[in-house]
Image 1: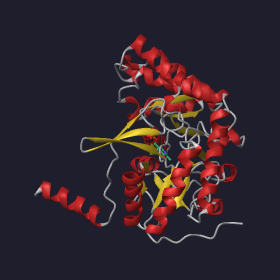
Image 2: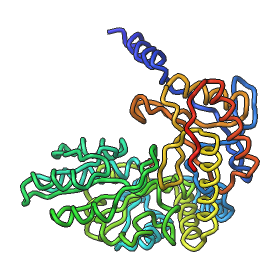
Image 3: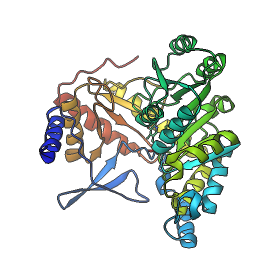
Image 4: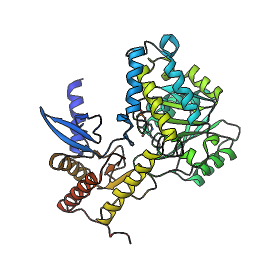
Length: 406
Ligand SMILES: *Cc1c(COP(=O)(O)O)cnc(C)c1O
């Protein structure tokens, strides 16, 4: 086989479909977010980032940076081993206690990333509960899908956010079999929020465990940043709450929280937890400082929601179609992969505005979009420049507008 030719043909197919991914080469500027330097062929320009998952700007928060500096000075760079073989640092232990407290659970367990926490936990639970059936929301993230697939357990997809469909599908399975319902709170591409309470009711009715991915909600919702389940007083109803330290908390890493026995079980059996080097202590220290800060400060969450509402209002007033949702994610619908990429390129090259185009397979074909994530550090001037630029490009591409809502 001509391996190189095969790789090139596969890449050419992506180009043809207009969904070849080009990474923006950025240098984030501490103290100046959402500003970043953009590198193109040796040239450097300034851009404003409008698509970051550092939702609250915690990646530049002085308390977070100070905690990381201090931990690095005390402990050095890496953890030096897997958790089992010399790599458990006191900062990991403190962070796990912080996370258990955040979600009001007995225990928590750290992973290399949110992706790995989903993959490792779901694959371990579903594989090691005898004859387990997983009920997976059809909109679930790739990391959950891959974890479930790897478990080789039977998987039943239920219609996105449709608890009646879930109930029907659960009723069709032998009541004696172990069951796990896997879903998310905030879905990251549409920004819709699941009916957590109703899902828990159905799961209880069928004696199932519940697994909730709160990756796009931790730090952002709830009086202490515990996520949508905290806001709605539902944390105690979930068997597993999973989150990331890399998005609103602004650092890196993933975790689960739940009962002591469940966490100990995953700790003891999950290959993706056991056979990998522990997080650098400085990351654990920074994440802990971020969580501690967001547990008691409402300023960031309030300003975040205010900025989101303002951007949405301004875009809607211009008839630029935003998918309606109750969260902080603003999907501006282009519905064409080539135009979506083109608008994104023009924004970047001519206006210094960076919004990555979101195309298939991240979203279904025909729903290509610009996913805008306003943050507390975007100014009124930033918002003016964003909406004016989008409005100009909308006209230039002859994209249709929606009548402004009354
Ligand atoms: C980003 C994401 C993850 C993975 O989290 P990382 O910490 O970035 O690996 C998991 N679930 C969802 C829904 C995500 O969007």
